[in-house]
Image (cartoon, rainbow, N blue to C red; front, side, top):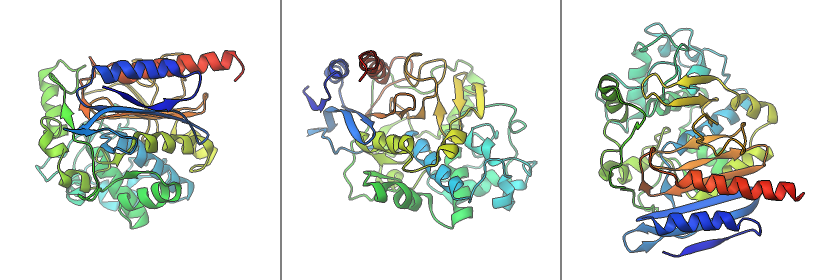
Length: 374
């Protein structure tokens, strides 16, 4: 398959790595890198849907890349004085004080250490309000703040309700008003069925939680994900894309995601002090459910021991959020770049080297420029 797009001089190795990915792909892929508003890399290839080629403007569900978008909204609200990471959740959402959660701070919700990784009752996935109410009444699995475990879907319900309590608005409205519309970003949380979106597909052997071997905790993972990633029916449905699920339902182009992180770095969205607060370590350790190394800021994933955000030479201060099946969206502050790898072909984490190979090539290209004083 043909590689489309272009790279700035000096980034040819990134294009070569991308060409290898496209050649091995049965779906579509895109990689975008932006520095201070200027694209350094803008590449795409493969198919968005059967018989439909991927283009520069192809949108795709970014799954948990959504969490990075929503973390940015929360940081903007923090900058406006509407939320405080050290404040009790119950200050904004009184019902949350139930079941021993009266003193839980907002930071523990954002940093995946609150101990509410699944919803006890079997509720419709798309009902944000009902799931939030159930979580408010629910007792945590552990003393909040003592363990960290990825809250795959419940992060979205919790943050959606918090945002609504302090603004009176839906989180999808705020994504549009604070991020997308002012900066002409093609990203949405709550996508109308008339908006074209790439068709998601699972690679053979696709599976989640590849670090996990324990069968008892595997059952917890199944409760967490509710079968969302078991087939393509739900994830490709207009109902899923339209539900404003703040943990995994956003739709965007790779270019929009890279530009979002570039805007965060340049100060166009956040004061430096708020960004520093949001991207310092708030929780860290081995996931108590999934056995995967984790580091979180306030909703953002941070650079970790397994190289989620590139090789060790890339940037130890990297932040962003990955997405199920291989998406990788984030920033290297010391290099001044925002990046996004987007795909509609879901691959298992233990075999998927696509984003890692691109970030390694990007790191090499930037190091060459830096040695040459560019």
